[in-house]
Length: 317
Image 1 (cartoon, rainbow, N blue to C red):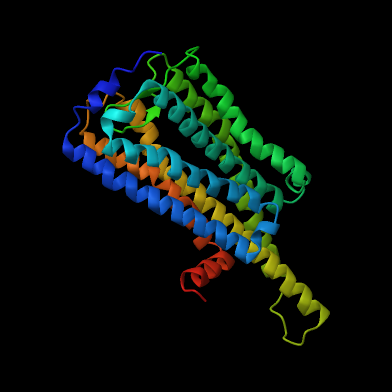
Image 2: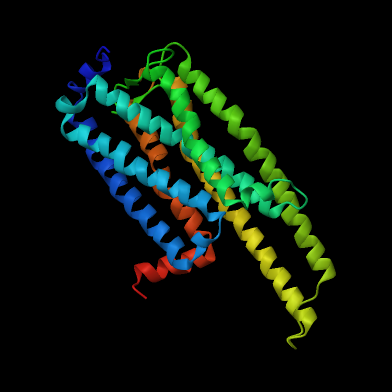
C-alpha cells in the first residue's frame, strides 16, 4: 500500500483549520458519548429495553456512540498530532470502521421504519418477523455485515480506494476517482430511500385513518369506570402510543436526512475542495457529524416516558 498523497497536505494545514478540528471534533466526541450513554441509560431505566422493537433504537445509539469514540476521536487526535498518525494503514483501518458504521446506521434507520410499519399498519406480514427475537438479532447483525462486505473491495484495492480528504482528516472511500464513491451513494439511496418513503406513507395513512375512525365511533369516557370506558381508554392509549412512535421515528429520519444530505452533496459537488472555502467544507462536515448527538436526543425527547426518565436522571430525582 502506498501512502496517499493527501497525507502530505496535512502537514501544511494552517493553524486555523487545525484549531477548528480541535474544538469541533473534541466537542462532538464528548457530546456524542455523553448523550448516547444518557439516552441508553434512560431506555434501560424506563424499562423500554424489554420491548423488542426498542432494540433497533438501541442499535442506532450504540452506532452513534461508537462513531463518537472512534471516528471523531481519531479526527480530534489527528488535529493535535498531525504528523504522527496520518499513515496509510491507519487510513484503511479507520476508513473501514467509519464507513461500516455509517452504512450500518443507514440500514438501521430502514429497519426502524419497517418495524414501525409492522407495529402500526394493520394486515401486514412483517409483524411476525419483528416480534421474533432471533430474527431481530439476525437483522441487526446483517445491517453491519452487508456494508463490511462491500467495503472489502476498497480494502483490498479491488475497486475503490480509501484516502484522506485535504481538510476533513477523515479517511473514506467516497472520494475514489473510479466511481466507487458514486456507486456507494446511489446504491445506498436505492436500497433505503424507497423503504423509508413507502413505509412512512403507509404509516401516516394508517394513523390518520385510525384517528378518524376512533373520533367517529368513540366518545370520551364517562368517568364511571364501566367496561365501555375501559375499552375506550385502552384504545385511545394505544392510539397515542402509535402516534408517538410515528412522530419519534419520523423526527429521527428527517433529522438524519437534513444533517447528512449536505455532506453527500458536497462529496460529489466539490470533491477536491476547490470551489468553496475549506471552512464551508468543515462546517458542513461537522453538521453531518452532529447527527451522533442529535439523533438520540430527538428520539428521547419525542418520547414522553423517556423524556421524563432522562429529566429525572439529569436532576437526580
